[in-house]
Image 1: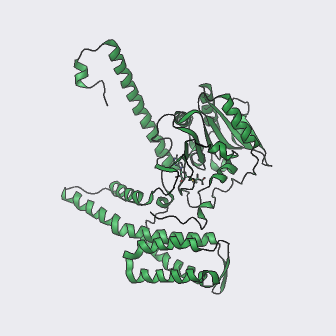
Image 2: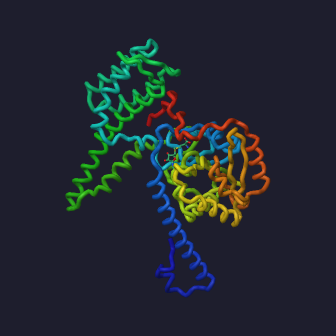
Image 3: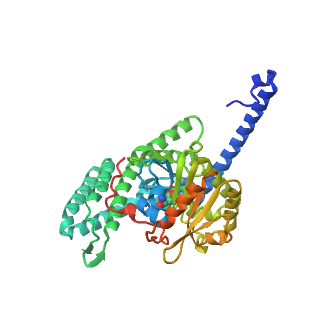
Length: 426
Ligand SMILES: C[S@@+](CC[C@H](N)C(=O)[O-])C[C@H]1O[C@@H](n2cnc3c(N)ncnc32)[C@H](O)[C@@H]1O
């Protein structure tokens, strides 16, 4: 990048206009650098605050509509480009969607402690085999699992990756209904979803241990030797970086057929200005980080949203969890920043459900907006300059969309855990 300090530029006399342009450019660079620093700091805040609660998440589009109160064709209009924030299990596989997440579900669940896992695994194998044997329609599963268990014992670590993948694949053969199983002397209720989880955990864990043993540890040893030869040592941070990048390369893998997947933490994202018609964020940016954000943090969020949205673009975020148990420190920092955004040409509203599931809309310039945040399901941000036609259509369709709102009290949806979700091959 060219700067004013470039020595050749400094020597040569410049036309006034050219110098002005250089100064503007330098100013832009400083502003860009400041912006990058601010975004990087905010990204760090996200990583510090957003608990990796991914185990049972992965809502499909229909659930997005039910929980946000916004109809599908407004969330994901035909031919639109959509930025979806947070999809660790790659469930939003729609055309035009680019999902970002700073961590995949599999990275978050990576087994870092082989000893603990290997202490648990034999018992898990045996329990699953017992359960499957006790039921006619799952006897086949019992036989296959017992074979895999034997193979592990016979072949050791070399077979962990293959057997792990086979166990994950086997989950597709689980019966779809929720059976009640009898195990030994105990009568035990084991839902299909629990069986699915135990098998996934077994399969993934075996593959993780294989990765640690055959790729991660050898690489760390190699780096350690190289550093030692150079008279240095491998720091804890460097070791972590090596681990994380190998885990990332093996686990952050795009599996969706239609949607894109990019690793990034909003608002620090690598997209051009005005590239999206919609931004959706379900149980992601609004839940863990909003409650502790300051006015300036919020302003940066709205600015980034406006930068990314095309003209007439709409961003929808839910749920807005301001209840005291989520510790929202200062609701007015959110509403003030939204009002500032409105004053500078943007717009925002809240979608609110009453106890009977009826919807209403409260606009940012209406009295009582701050108080309404407490009861809101969804926050909607309109790009600066959005036409009233677009807003009216959006609101009309949203109010006319009458599906019963699903409960948002439970953070976890079980959709990612259903037994048909078995495509976890790398
Ligand atoms: C609870 S899950 C919800 C996933 C899915 N949208 C759903 O509704 O089931 C939240 C995901 O959002 C991701 N996330 C949270 N804040 C984010 C941010 N600022 N940028 C990117 N991803 C974020 C987390 O890593 C996590 O995987």
